[in-house]
Length: 365
Image (cartoon, rainbow, N blue to C red; front, side, top):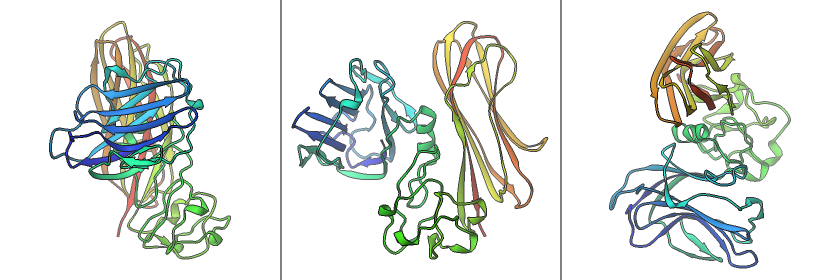
């Protein structure tokens, strides 16, 4: 679950619910994200086979006025024990309290059930609201899969576009299309389509063509296949392309260049922005440094390259991000190739555990 939030008071007089669901019947199940009086954020879970809390070690919000902050919580059913529950602040995983460390030993998330609804901006105590959140919440999204650290970083950096929940990782996302919204990637179920935009009987098994998009709303009967072809993007619009996540590239066991990810994209036209993210796991061995390269190419011609170097001398996980922005690419100039590479100056016990690249194309008059 992810949310942008701006509390009126970062350390309120009483605990406040960002989202919460509690069912006192049967297995006494509950789950929720709570802003504590200390300014820390807690992620709670309880079911018939156990309970756990993942609470930030340090305060996320100061006492008094606050600024917009992105909070995301993840419970990974594939991890039993340390790391099963995580809290991310502004796209980065945060250290947890030693006594509320999100350890899911003995917990089976599939055993969680509830007959109660999830309350947003309040606590749901067996159907009774309380612990209201004082402030503003925005871009609230729930996933039925555990996002990776690289995906959380993209969720913070890119977020959503228009009024459609933008899913850059290929998960099915139900969104609501309203006046002024734009069409991006993802799928829209018929029961989620709002009035004043498009009705369920207008969904057909064909793609949208360029002349059928007007001011971000669809006025014809041409929506289908859960996709929008590149030429269907009108002026003053944005398209996001994502390279399939590399869950585990493997070891960087030598001093050679390693191509972590690469892809080629056709049909671009407009201003291009490229972002890349890598998560490295250094298990120990020779200390040194690693350089990460992000490249934008047209065939064998380099359009732009950026790089960054970080040292490794203490075992642990490191996250690294690079970006290239404001590249003008005239329509009809051919395909572009995007690369994410890494190179070590020694031969360490080092591996890439996650990586992602996204390219954002903005078309304007």
